Length: 260
Image (cartoon, rainbow, N blue to C red; front, side, top):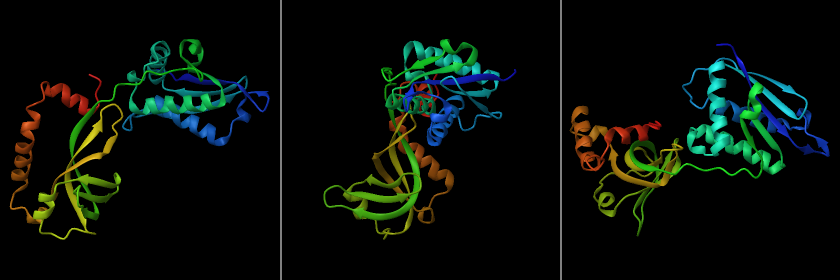
């Protein structure tokens, strides 16, 4: 399928002049380009061909020349979004992109059209008065293995472990006095892997760092288990929790971020 043009058209006044591309700051342009790209290609693993852009006078118009299939799919989403204004139909990166664009035009009191160049009036229109319906937040608990340096451990009333990680920065992991009191290792300021429970937002993929709970310290050299035995033990420990799930297939699809 041949390439098609997706257009972002911004109307407004700046410096007492009708808005044109030369009145946009370079940071604003970079932000707009990045957000449109994330809307058109929200999945990291998604293959994409080269995206060409061009600027036009007559308001500030940015055109994106993209694969025909991507343009048509995006137009369908933008048209539906213009009818319902329900962000729940979008993927997390697309939601972020639309919200970022909306913040920009709201701050500057601009109006915007976003869609196929030859069907722009059938795409998305927004201004500062536009109100979005946000998807209901759904949180699920997941087990994670996280590695970092323990920078604090213990606590007089609320026992916890402070783990400095690459993934989350420094995360406070709730524990209990018995688990920490019975631990005979000096773990402070040492690299450590832990198994924890943490809440994840199905809609955005975001983890709630404040929900982290310590399940165990992982010291493979001290385990008198084979890898298979270790896996079997984890499965046995999670079985009571899994038995409470009425529809495992639907739950797994939600955890993976599938729509259905």
